Image: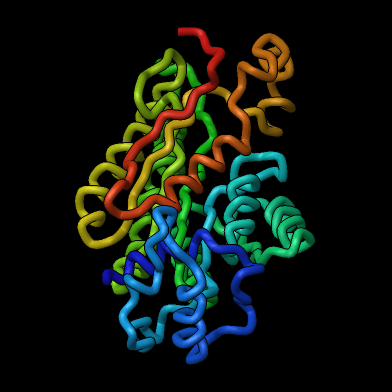
Length: 304
């Protein structure tokens, strides 16, 4: 039985079914197999039928407390925070990273108050050393099973008067940061041949728009990076996905900065945070014989 099966199987079980705190280290092997003995597939096939009788099949580095790394978190009512909350509810120890310490600490506190596990870690997505440190520390806490690159605000600007440094900054945040993050994460996942790496895309990932040349170029670069990584590493057990958020997000940034747009769009004209996060988590839970590489999220009420 491939090791990936174990990975996807107990993702779906709750903490009430199996005590993640008590069963660590050498105890995991025996306890995990007893755990499998109590469950079946949706078609009724016992899980234990797919598990070898030797409990040492589970490698010594495969700990039940898996981690998630979300790079690009901001306000509590933003996408990075919402993704972190959903990952924590799935039983992952979430490492929340962004540039503003107060924001990520609020997110971590909210998760902990709900009974989850979270660690706030300040990092600049464009700084090689800071990204490397983030990934190293998360991996020390437990194997990184889910990694999301969510950095990259919109970079509007008139092309004729745009400075080269502004264009470069858009590329650094959206594309170069994605390279740094994915390279560090994949290095951790490869020895296990397990893990999910997801990128947050936008409308700009797939089509240009006036006065957004820097942003569209950068997001398109991130999209093709994800495509290349999927082709290179999915055969090695790493699920790489790109989530296009095709429209405005009902989060703090847009509601605070563009109230007129929110009013004209209405609640149905903006994409809900929970719906987006649920899509990310659906990709995370997919079995390896049915992986989605790219998905486009839209509201039903949009202007075509």
